[in-house]
Image (cartoon, rainbow, N blue to C red):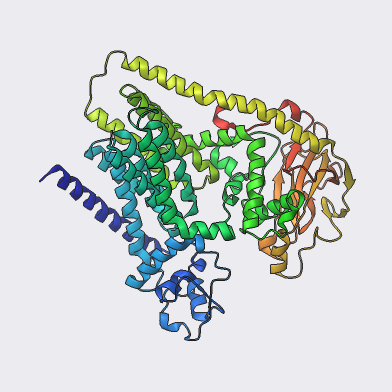
Length: 629
């Protein structure tokens, strides 16, 4: 049997075995009472496609279909759709998911229309991801180490835990296959035609993946960088091949993603929404970062960010009019807001990226108690080992690790970062393979590797230090504008000890849920200042919103470490439509709170929560990785 046949047989074994693992695990998960969640209520176009009606919605939605989409029943039959059913494409917000929903529709045509019947599709996605891991590792290591890495990936608790979320797991095969193509282009010299074909395939795969999850766009920059900087032969050679390859990449992507791109361009698609949500407070703990007197927002909630963006647009982009959620106008406004965040907090963005790299590298080792940064140590060993042989590949490895790990800081949730467990497993495959097949190092190789690793650390640290110096000045200037702004007393009345209320909710949200939600798209918001003194340690402040409609309720409890014990603490909090007042947990008379609205900040792009103690200017106004403080 030839080597290629053996390799093909191994790939077939990997696919069949992992497909079976994924299929059986999903069935077992459901049998034990688990609930696969992947926004099933949005899958109506998939049902319509499976029933031969096209990528459309029904109006009104038939009761049987509504029950199926609400998971009140497991199966559905096309015969249950009325013959006079009215179809529409209005409010078809699922357009960016077109390829995912089409894939589900095809599966339903074969397997029958049911949620539990999709288990083979889960298994197919799982197997496609595992094969991609094996193909990637085989470009770097031998078959034994590659099979071991693939097995570790396929049996990983992190992978299995995310498999039940079909919408998010569906991007995993695309992510890992793109990484495999990236490695194939850089690791070994290729003929110009092969480089162009790989770039075209990369673009096609990314374009198709974009129709599953729009965050696949994050895969575009690494191949551009690889083509320009890391192809064998150096930066200035093969210029024509590089230009043609970049054209092939763009062509493949545009052809494959055309339906999605046209929809997003004309109707919007929350392109920057998720990046901004990823900056909210819950992600600080997940990334292990903290510091500064400011926050970008307390709640990981779509409506909270919608209110923030609407307030920004009302002040600085009134030409956009009403800001409908995830509309084209929303994309424009949120893009402008994000640019202001990046310009003001560049050091924090870099810090969060570095923190994400450490976290991603540790994914396979999280169950190894008491050994933090084991993945980082493995990565340093890997990069140093590559540098002993080939500096170009060592630079590429450093870039790939930093990019694939760092970009997960955009929204550091398991459903976003789980596919990147392959990074450390591929590194381990190489280390194990080299341990099994040792090769004598050339004279001076260890010294060159040491110098390379030290140089990389220095090069990564210097921009962070420069950006921290810049950000510290800019943020102090921003917070000073809050501190010196004129203020008018807020019309709050103390209804009980520690409880302060407005006569009526700010920008009254209306009498129905739809009115309350719509109010978030036109809110101007206000910046509330609380001057707090004399409160007990461990006290907190709850900013209260109208609780009538939970979807529009932005209430939040703010723990405050120093509530005016060393002099008054000034707390700044942007408040939006539906705000009704605040409650201080310390109801003692010694806890004094004065409330006012800031004026004159209409042209300030960023209205951020902040806590200013007496010595706030002496504190670093940038985030730090907590372990390194």
